[in-house]
Image 1 (cartoon, helix red, strand yellow):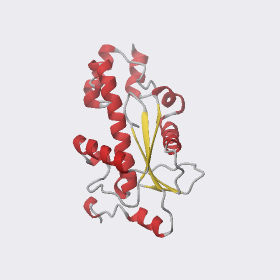
Image 2: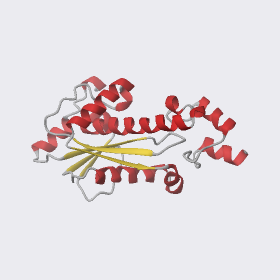
Image 3: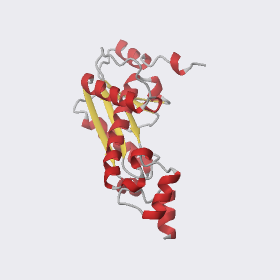
Image 4: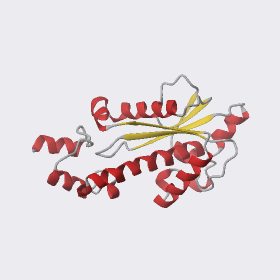
Length: 208
């Protein structure tokens, strides 16, 4: 069994480049589980030569490391696209469908049409060749880059929301259903950015 350290996270990109494919996009999302805020997706196209030693799935990195890689990816990427769908859309069509929309929007936002798209786990209906990779944020350096861009982008949004509504502790919980967050909902109610179809918020609305 391969350990995380032994995973060759350049393998997919190397295989595609050997086949003559050079504009390779990585797509990932963050924010499917929180009770508040948008689901955010990123699409990143890296050059053939780049320096991002140590880059991996954003969940495996510290906040300081993510911020460092965020800047490095911004500096080195050929293109970066961001897509997001807010709580209203998530409540209307469900988080799974909203995530797919955010990913497609991120690809469009790149401004460059990739030759092949590597996607973390999700299968997308695209007019482009694509590969869906389970644990892609660990197995593909390009998806890892997208993972970091999506995570840092959403975290920054949650820090801004925290300044508006400090009682919910968004700077610490990032909108996820922590005990403190749920207690804050019960004490202060909800805000427009809360996802009303997610159980703790839905329960509050039913019981108030």
